[in-house]
Image 1: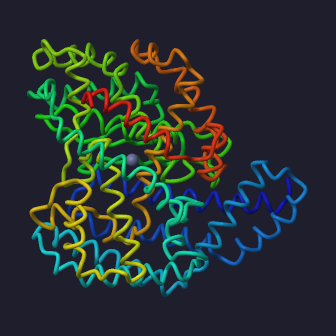
Image 2: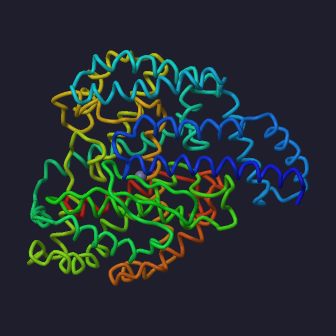
Image 3: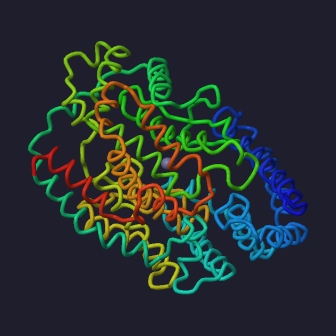
Length: 502
Ligand code: ZN
């Protein structure tokens, strides 16, 4: 291999390692760090991130990149080398388009705005947050200008989270599922025919037993605990520092068994994806998941398509009964199936069920687009939020803390991020259909607690590619067709019309 290419790889490896070290400090911050260390920890993470950014955006990186591109011109367009350089080019262009002074201003405002949001949410005081949010939309609008866009300002931001996705493609996706989702939600609410089973998961579930249970299930589905671990955090997440150190977090509620279990399954889906990245990609930009949407497709696949399906519930019931014999006594699989699939329009996105979840995302997508283009002003946010909650979900937040102040994203400048949650749901159903076609025996395997064939298929078609292919290309290669909303819409209709006998 050419000299410049090798020099570039060595340089990028240092950037990757610096970012992984910063990530590990961040993981510690959310799990074990004493609260008093918060300020110093912020400085430590900031210092490492700054070093990584300086190294990556230096002129020398650009020169090496150019030389490496010339040296590899004769290679296959689909080779790992050419794909790696294409991804590096994209990341380098994005990183170097922002002036250093702007990066510093944005970063200062992010920490300010986050702190104000925490207080505003605690005090249920939108007016307190409004000026910080106005400035944030202003800054992020400038950021989009630096990145540049052709059709819609939103495209410049969304593309950073989901390469190739646009405002138009997301709007079309929502247009394809919104009427069906609203109608299905209403039909379920009106039916309320069968509430049996909803008490199947009530009781007292000691934390230690839940910890053992979730570890048991993680191992059963194939999460490698020699290359990963699970801890507790207030807001569950998955962090990784290479494919051999993947850390999941979960949160236990002694009154509700599903919270810890399903957040473990969700984060394990992210974790399996990271653990499955090809070993030869370690220390390069090809390591790890390709986009937020594809990442979310893997967490949703394990949490919902597998975890909330009948075969998995049949596998799960005797396991639960072993860990919690008293609470689960007399519960049958159908009760459990109903209990984990209850649909209830609610105020909080992260607690939403499969049917209503995407309506929460749609509302945020519409609002943030309108705020960016100036169609709407930040001060109108609470009013517009509540009106759309009523329209889409039939519920109205009693206060802004459980309304427009609930999510952390905007306070941190994560604008154009929300649609990746819905794209993840869509991809998950499309991948699920391909998986089922490839493994006709899948249901029976899952019911027996046999997950290896499924994991192997995901490994071969999704995980091992890391970030080699952009999302739409990866989905097309894995499923034989470009991303489409049809699979998800059909999945929801079939499952919930059966469940609620509509
Ligand atoms: Zn997730």
